[in-house]
Image (cartoon, rainbow, N blue to C red; front, side, top):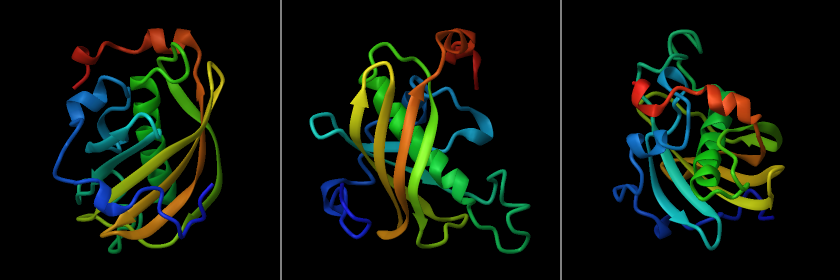
Length: 177
């Protein structure tokens, strides 16, 4: 595993203006909607090395702006981690890395550190690399997040398949705005 100072992927390896998956494409794989959608676009996918890059453009309309904190809105750390989890979930489901998993949930976070602040108007760039995959059981993913190429958050997350009956209860994408 790389240390927090070592980049998972050099910034020059991806172009934030070359969208691989827009919001509609992300919605094909991720069920989150409305306030809980934490990805704007995916700009890089490397299946062979299991690396994915996406971003979230933050506006002053985010659900947390009014209350976290009044007058000085800061993106909550837990939402930063959620953004990384959604990127890892997108990649895992799209490429069927867990073998038939339709819905991925949080299994845990480790070694998460916050190194900077994220505010409305920022573009939060997320780089995720799958470290381990246990089919039908779990993924382990390293992530790094940046604002203007400055590291603001990093850590390890675990994703676990959620029960099939939950996935079956999801409304079809065409029924969700």
